[in-house]
Image 1 (spheres, one colour):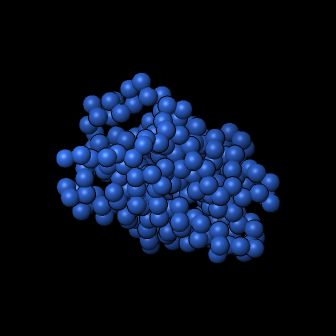
Image 2: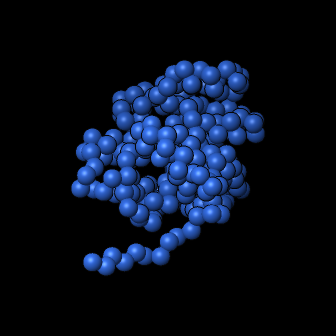
Image 3: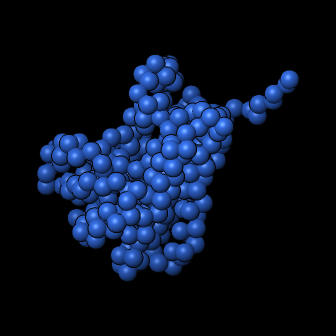
Length: 244
């Protein structure tokens, strides 16, 4: 039975991805910080879902968890977050540290832990959750957008390093998506959360899980390197001009 490992699996895209792969007959290793949610997820399919508590920011924890889980066929680096939309001159350095530690260093730790086994087996797939913010800047994107720009370039670098190994790499870049992600970004401010999505028809976590399933189930000779996904209601605004 093939095995997918998903970080940040307790909600949103991570949970939807676990559920999609299990539905398709895979075994899933669900990793996340919230143990009660991991337990609830595992209870839905006790024969198909293994769980482990993991904060990807902690390198030693990552190494221990990945060593214990055994071989995996697909790694979905989904754990990540955005904090705040303030301009750079007003942002919290603590928030910046948290985003860098999670979105960049956490992804690096997990990828490095998974790669040797994949390379040895000459098969495997690393799926990194980026964002359209990694390509298209917007006010307040600052460190979050930069961290996702890192994910894109790191994914491209992995493709170069893994040339000839049979291991595939994909960067998935969602646009506006409704999930707990934005609730975390607004630090529980429900009015900002609701206003963001009102009448916007955003993506749902299941939409991105579908894309992850699709890229990982292409024939072995096909590598889908980059996927950008936006809701129909979202497009790229023209460049702004300040007059004053």
